Picture: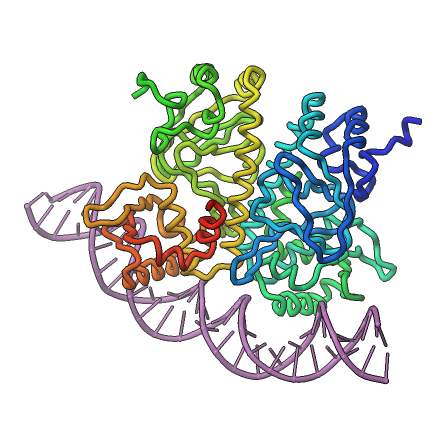
Length: 243
Length: 243
DNA sequence: CGCACACTTGATGTAGCTCAAGCGGCGTGG
DNA sequence: CCACGCCGCTTGAGCTACATCAAGTGTGCG
């Protein structure tokens, strides 16, 4: 039955049953081709995720991962968080990056040969990859503005709204939307170019000001996005841009 | 100028006579195709550069440009500087970016139709574009580390070595290599997430310490890259990575 | 029950920002 | 040719936001 057909290759746990970044541009037939060539691997929380071999692609099927860049003295920058459906590793773009599982994770890998095989049969694949890369470029532009020009509260507000946008939208019994924060304060700090104490203090302040609740570790609840959006100059931008 | 045989389509003034990012992956025959479809436009210093229409590509042929992101309150982040041969505007990746000519500039534009036409005949084009996008992603990863985790002197040292790497390598009569800094202190500040006084002070300090000379506005002279490289944790990384 | 670990909170330090003069090179106009 | 004014740059003094260092607190797990 056609309505029951899965939106993706069948491995990803993408929120809302949407397809992952690789499957999305492909027609159903191609997805079947894909599913036969995929290799799924699991990693435990905290472990490093192997990168795809040159020319291959890997997609995060389930869990939360991050891409980090580290200096010799251990200073760290978290470049992005990766959610289910995100391309983890776009070919050579990850040379200097380490991919780390934040929670237990399932990774879905497509070898170079498979990419070329599917690419030959379905031009949508390579177009989709360029699209993905361009979307990443836009996102990294936003990130640079955050890192270069925003104050600590602005960064945290931007971050919360970003996590809200990527979350499942689950509502809290006490009202408001739950934002799962599976990563540690230190991960957040390294993502935002702050230190972990500043992250903690700022979240506490937001809580005192009634902007968020922190019912239990690993989650925040946002009652009204309005006040946060006012503090986050980028997200208002984004809303205007999306029209 | 227009009539001479060149390694590229004939418009770009890429240092060392190399081809631009679009021409590079293409065989000579394709470059001829390309040259016939190009449209070159000049902009004066300080003016905004029109983006290519959706699906089109534009390349910086001559001069220095920058891509910036701006907030409503005029805070600015310079995302990249663009040198001759760089792709200025990779399709939709520039939605939220403004492209500004730092010096007088020549831009070389390829319409969507032309991209598709060449792409059909030469698969190298679209592969080259994905490569370009991936290279940009790597570079933006570096930039995030700079913005999120480096001190002001580290940022300036990194910047100087970056500009050195992209420059023509011309040597100063008094010894050392000339680094052309066509952009203002404010541009540098917005590129590095600092303010213009900090940039100025740090450059002055480097000068006092004998790391650089500042013979005339718009240029710096680096005698020995060693001490700067020691201060720039990223560039040492890069050297290790390349080795 | 108690240890470990992540997080919070507090006290203090400081790098870089802000505000405010100077300086100098260049272009304009006498 | 020189005088003047503009603009980008430099330099200084003081401030503040965030980092650093150092306890506490609580939660989950053995």
